[in-house]
Image: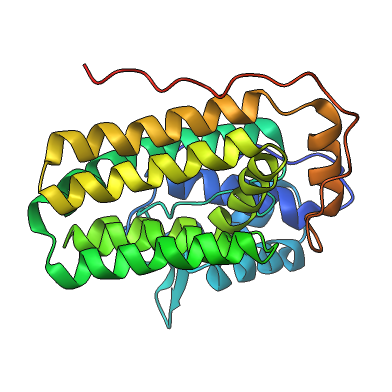
Length: 270
């Protein structure tokens, strides 16, 4: 097995050692049946003290990558090669990040809506309709409607009866809140945007209610496509405001009056 290269003189050597060990584990160099070099060997290979190695190993143990077997040595924990899905904690706070999240949602929610159309029950459709009414009322009260918007899309996913779609959306929910706050704040700046969103949600619901999987897929994809277009039409000042203020309650700054634009036209179904 190829030995580790010595690490350089950085402020925190343990970080470098941990990163090098983590890279070998991720690459599959070590598996649950192979023992890692001893603490002394790692110390010699990296050119650092055993205290540094011990700290690095301790970090990887806390991450669930390594384990010690008494009297045997250091091993990769079973299942450590399964890569968890990670998204930057500040995802949804820039135009590019929100656009990327919308693209991801397009792939997931199109199929989610199609499956919902095939598998929905009357109670599912009633719950979606209630969520959209709640969304309209929240907007009428001057609220952002984020919770209601997210709930509608979650109800669609639940109606798909696919637990993996639900799991992915539950994970994304940590990041969708910020992204949805941004998109809804942008859409609230213009009456035509808000009206278009309402029509798009209604089209998704109508297709699901009718049991038309193809139409539901198109409607959900069109909703995401148009959201992406609306994001592109937001000005730079909006995104600066969004990035600065998302830590609290997002309140976009008043923009200078602009010439009205026509609402984005949804593409015709293929």
